Structures are given as C-alpha cells and as structure tokens.
Image 1 (cartoon, rainbow, N blue to C red):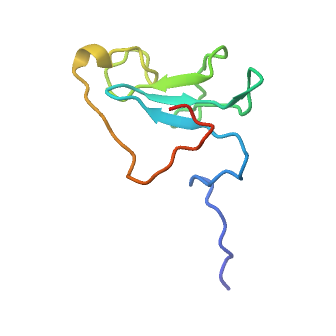
Image 2 (cartoon, one colour; image 1 turned 45 degrees about the vertical axis):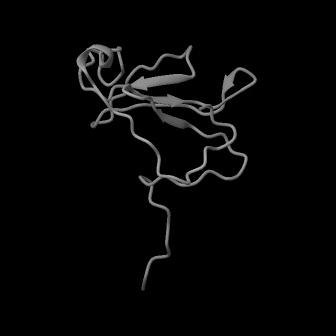
Image 3 (cartoon, rainbow, N blue to C red; image 1 turned 60 degrees about the vertical axis):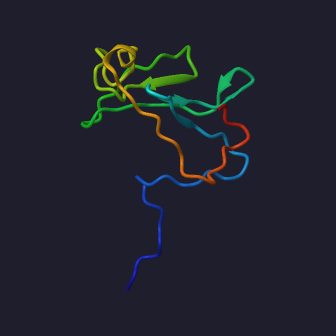
Length: 107
C-alpha cells in the first residue's frame, strides 16, 4: 500500500493567493533580510528563529525585518552587525531569469 503524496514539513509550499508572504531578500554584498508582511502597521505573521537544538534566538519586536549574516564575520551571529562592509565580502546573487517579484513585495 502506498502513502498518498503529502507536503513535507521542511519543504516550502506556495502560499494561497492573497496570503501574506514573508520575503527573504539577498542584499548585494550584504546580509539576507527577512521581511515580514505588514497590514495596518502590524505584522501579519509571526517569526521565530531557532538554533540546531531548538533554542530560540530573541528577535527585535519593533522591526518588520531581520538581517541574517552571510559573511561569517559578525560578532552577533546569526544576525548581521555590518561587518560585511569592512571584510571584503562579495555576493551579488541574482534570481534565475523569468522569476517574477510578487506585487506586494518591496524590491
């Protein structure tokens, strides 16, 4: 007997049309910026970040975005502290051609 296809919990799934979307933006030569959707000044989804054993990192509650280090030089891992500006980090990754930006996503 085969199991029906089920979404895997660790795999991203497309959001239903009209749903709020979390955007992860690759900043040129900088961090990954996780941006929460906001409606009427309030975030519409929660955000939680855990380490590999399930411990939770404290996140700023007054911001709608969190910057995650890509350069490896930050003193506040896993968050960006601006060290990429002085360590020579270079990354200008681009999405594959033909990938559209959702209309409600800041660019």
